[in-house]
Length: 315
Image (cartoon, rainbow, N blue to C red; front, side, top):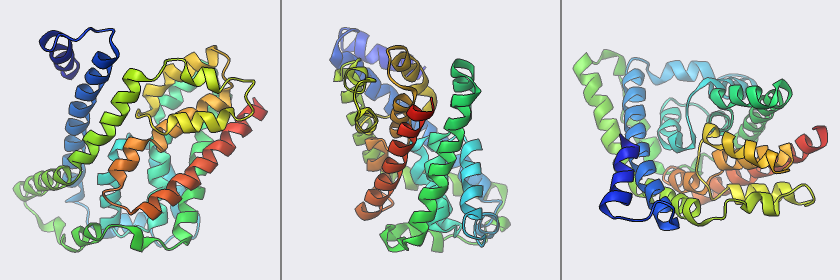
């Protein structure tokens, strides 16, 4: 229904040609804006309703108080099995901070969850075999674990926006709510978070829509081919401005590999798109400050580049 509505507005109501760059960009913007707002609202509501049954102490017991690496490893495992994309970072981040989970452990989850998608993992296995799928799984988890440990050791809690901690301080005794109160609690969470981030969502998707409509289809294969020693750097740089989830990039990766792009280069492009997209950074800016965003991008970017070259050597 969302796709039908978007197509109707762009191609029927506005009468923009379907094969035009403007039409593709505008269709992408309307479709993804509606889809993302709806999905975020549903997800925030469900997460908030479920969280009303589980006080912060339970999540804290699971992911905090563990030895170095153990909490980050558990968070990375949860990231692998959780169906969240990069657009979900704000409500997830707020929820983890509310639960008192350490910042480094939180980032292990936030890094791993969009990169290692279970559906993408199955598709990679089907298309390319267990070796590539296994390396993709292991590398995504290693990036999440190492990145989280580094961020945790830098003591960057002051780089989180103050209102996130204020939200944490204001919510108590959720186990004692009635069912109606839980529904109201979840609804209020949706309204509060969407009001805070909707403009960032639209800006981020707008950037992605312009690139989607106007960037040449063969841009990556042209500049990141097998003869370019800096192909992985180029792939990561080109992937950052884009917006998609891991599943959405699989057909692109298949096409790129078919055009001669090395497997490691193609996978590094996918990881950059799903873990370091500019739209995600714009949305994430609502909860963390520029310094932490820069450190996050630097750690994950370097890790993805390393993994890309490693894959190219191995494969």
